Length: 114
Length: 115
Image (tube, one colour):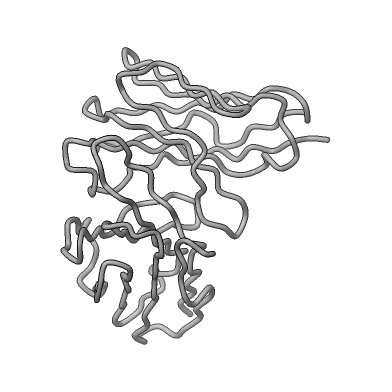
């Protein structure tokens, strides 16, 4: 069974369009995240949600809007796409506790903006 | 800002040899560290973790060492195999934030296993 899944795997679109990436986890975790990995493989946190509540918004342009309809889902909507948005976006989840901060990552969505 | 970094972008080792991947971190408040492995086209995969109250932790063929004095973390892989070829990331978190703050990743080291 896939623990953290994302759709689509690949997304190619024109500048100025609006697109969404979906993420679902079946691990029963209470916290979900979005990370962006650039062309140099650098991974950076964008958002985190705990029990559907936004915890972190790391200086991400407001064109990016995460939405968590329930604990198992965290979707990422991007308005007015720009060339610099091209990257691989990873969703992750964790069950936050005092003893364990391991995050489980999805397979990634490669976004290409033309 | 504070970040986690790696010393070498690429490391090439012979199959069967041991490899050591290094990482420096700057946030002295970090209390939890993880090594992730990322194969081409896949998401990061957990390898091993260590808390700041430990200086060594061993897994299957992997050992993580933590030196808090110099803020240095290393991953040792014993008897490397072709399947170990991947990009390795260290990541850290300051647990005082409740754990939902997200991981801070280093730049990654590409480990290449030569036959």
